[in-house]
Structure formats: C-alpha cells, structure tokens
Image (cartoon, rainbow, N blue to C red):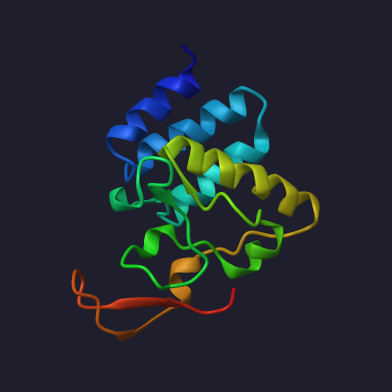
Length: 142
C-alpha cells in the first residue's frame, strides 16, 4: 500500500481533515503527480470535499455540485470549471473516486489555461436560511 492509499483511507474516516488533505497533496507531489497535488491543495485551502448523500444509493453517494442548491457548500465547485467537466459522473460510490474524478477534469482545465479561483468561499451570499447553519450559501459566478 502506498502513502497515497494510506492517506486516502485516513480521509475516508474524516473527509474534513485539512491536514490529511495537505499531506495527500504532498504525497501526490512526491509521486510526480503535480496536478493532483495542486487540486488537493486547492480543496484543502478552500475547505472543499464531495458531499455524502447515502439515499442516492451506493453507486452515486458521493457528489460534487456546480450550484449552491445543496445544504453542503463545501461540495460546490466553481462554475468556471463546468465547461471542462464530464457530462456524467457527478455522483460516485466513494469519496476517493469522486476526488479522482475531479482531478481528471482539473488536469484538462489547467491544460486549457483555466486558473483556479482563490477564496471561492468568499464569493458567497447569505441571503436565504439553511436549516443547519441558518444560512444558505449561494455561489456567485467565479
């Protein structure tokens, strides 16, 4: 088992652990996968991760979103990335598969000149109520 595999296993237990995600970024970099490392660092800096939705069934329970229509703003990707994303695959059976799916089109986007927005979470409006946090996070165009 590689360091990457071990770190993914640890993230499965706590997907919100930013220190683990940064360690995973370092492991990808040490393995020569700079794009995966960059994506993992960006996810950590922005405190982002796929959303777990068990009622979607085991084949599609980990999700990314492109809109703020979710109670989990940590899983909303910047809209500027959408044009590079596959038409399908937004729900996957594991957190790791969801993140590797993102890394796949992250590479395509970066080769095309896309620049990851910094501080995406600062582009939020809080003008609707969310039952959990008393706020709804609506992403503006990034």
